[in-house]
Image 1: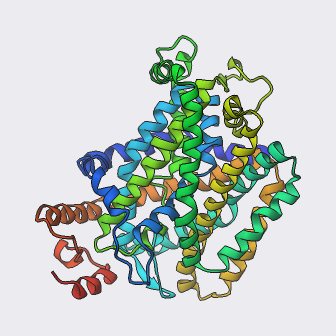
Image 2: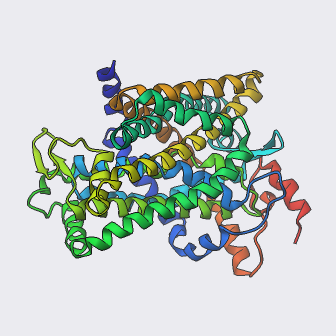
Image 3: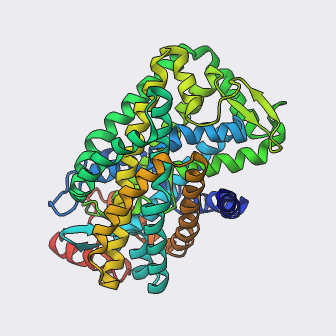
Amino acid sequence: MEGFINTIVGYIWSDALVYLALAVGIYFTVATRGVQFRYLKEMIRLLFDKNNSGQGVSSFQAFCMALSGRIGVGNIAGVATAIAAGGPGAVFWMIVMGLLGGASAFIESTLAQVYKESADKQYRGGSPYYIEKGLKMKPFAIFVAAVICLSYGVLVPGVQANTISDSFSTAFGLSPAITGLIVIMPLAFIIFGGIKRIARFADKVVPLMAIFYILMMAVVLVANISAIPSMTALIVKSAFGMDAVFGGIVGTAVSWGVRRAVFSNVAGAGEATFSSAAAEVSHPAKQGLVQSFSVYVDTVLVCTATALMILSTGMYNVAGPDGTMLVENVPNVAAGTAFTQAAISTVFLDFGPAFVAIAIFLFAWTCLLAYYYIAETTLVYLDNKLRYPYLKVILKIVFLIICYVGSVQSTGMMWALGDIGFGAMCYLNFIAIVLLGKTAFKVLKDYDAQMKKGINPVFDPRKVGIDNADFWVGYSDKHKQ
């Protein structure tokens, strides 16, 4: 079974998806005139923009909910896996994909805001909503919602739960069965408490989690600061085939760098569209900018710091496409969290594995909260169409069971299932946001014009020729300038 699943992964994560992700990022960067670069200062200001009526969540809460999905095992195990398969050059392409992905994140999150609606006294929206309302393709929207619900409710959660289990086993010697209970018991309390409880939890835990992890990495980097210039040079040389050892795996470096960047920051995959739609803002572009910034935090900051820490301490192995070891600095150590644990142990000794295990728990556990929110939102979308309200309770139970099963199953199986889920969503959402690009460009043009006038942008879809944005028609009538 595992071999069959890995074959499917090979087809989904072929070079076609890698270069599609790069092409979409380049297209949106050019078409928006580098929106992710020219509005960088505004992104930070908007994080703390106060505009909450009580029905939606704040921009900062939506940012943290999205970041809880972006920052996860991809930043620890995913970076190590990319280095092990693609060499140091993979790090360069991860950063490139992160920079380009900022534009893709802006487009999809802006669209999520444009076509959001009010349901259950909360804002709901995401890729199925903008596919139905923007593209007017209801069957396609229902199919996408079903794929997303299956992916985040069944296929993807096991990756996070399994990584927690693996790190706890290494650091504390806990059995997977015990770790599974540690994962699902507090998870049940949060998800049965509703989306607002998820938002309140995320906006407190995620910033502390990210700051603490970055500070620990900074200590390791400072301790190895003399090695950072040479490691940076190695990353660049390896990315373009100029290094003697890694020159022969440039294609693999590009493939794994983009692949793990997309897995980590999920820009363009549609994941952040659901938390983006939940935010209370006066203009859709505002949340698009906030989510663009979250990609920077995830990939350009956290993933890069993790990579430099692993490389500067020399705690990594690299295997060629044929399995021949090009570099074997840590014999008999599998790629993944062990690289990061070994790197931190060079400074913090026996505390290294324990710290990484705790960090992974926080990263991965908050990821699971984000996953559940996405699965529930797509189920609400399907429930409105299919009239099966009891499915929300079933989803909660199935989600908790999957998290427990993921804790005790093999690592390879869980990552393969996760790759299938993410890959399928990437194809579907990339197609949708490219087709809806012109709509997002209109929204950005309207935002640019209002910013130039020095006023707080308020969105009226009628002024820019966008239909089916019913929420914003009512909002603009209440907030006429």
